[in-house]
Length: 292
Length: 239
Image (cartoon, rainbow over all chains, first blue to last red; front, top):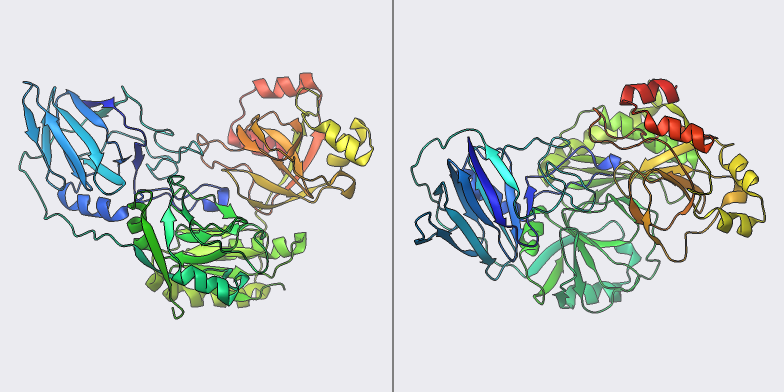
């Protein structure tokens, strides 16, 4: 038996995978990794990850091997180091597999010029799926672990490391994008041509009131010419909704399942991952695609 | 037939449009279409019915475009098929005791009626489950008798107890678990309606009919103590 213990949970660490689908009609949000590009990359290094990734934001977790040994890999742009059993410190890099032995501690200090990072574990973390997914929605209390990770959480990995060979991939080119192509939202016609012009030509700032549910933007007010209150309807991540204060919110992975605000536009799937990595105060612009 | 057509929702979604009104007959058509589309077993990620829309989400635009015609054809075909009725009719025990009926006085005062009249009115109607949303397993039921139509609380409550029955506008609901919320709370039911331990987590499905009947506090406590399985609940409280 191999086991690891969370020695410092960080502030936003959760278990995530590619998302929980087929349950949104029962009020269950899709959730899943905010930046899906990274867990796609990690699959190349740890193919047998069992869809049980740890997601962290800003401050990373520290993880110590309690028993046995584990093979892991970190994805994202972050500072990290390994505190070896014998007190020596080892440098380590994202996108390179890491073998950790009893007493070794991986310390992820922080993400750099980005928000989210991920850890993949060979053979997973010994978790049971919840509604066919390992993802966590802390607000709804749904997930294999239905809350943020805590200090002292222990995971048992029954299978032993398959090979000590070190595997690495070139650091993926996850370019920072601040201009987003968007498609018309279902309530585009709720906004006048002038307001649409403000949406396209305006600069919006990501505020610190942003989380797994949504990214709140600050910019020129986008007031609807019809109403900011629509009959609730199904929504999907990437939708840009505009409540009555005119400040748009980009809905992210833990979306409410139905929403009652008009949606001016929607991002494509890969841009949801891209925008999730932009820290507060980043300035962004939108480019509305008319043909799709 | 309220169905108006199918529109794109971004690069990977579709919206089936049933107009801008809301009524039980519109929702019946929406929920029937929801079942028909579900039964197509398309490679969709989610199919989400609401009052007058169905949103269908795919992994990408290619898969969406490959499947749009199948949905269109099914929607044109709806009249010719015999839909097996799989929705249920529920008779749900409700305790309107003052310990649970946190906002009973608001409704009494607004409509100038007695507590007994509120209970009789609320438990007199067979409600239609418009859809499930807001939080896991939360049913939007309606319509409440016009004498009970009440706006949301001016200041939402921070913590509504699990299993509480609420009224807001012309809808009634049950909170599956503890939650903030703005509905007027008039009672509580004695068992969970959303439980991840069950083979199917949500007791109600869109299209189900739900009627409440008033039980005493002691009867409520008796049912509460008994830990029903999903099958027992279905057998005991639905037809």
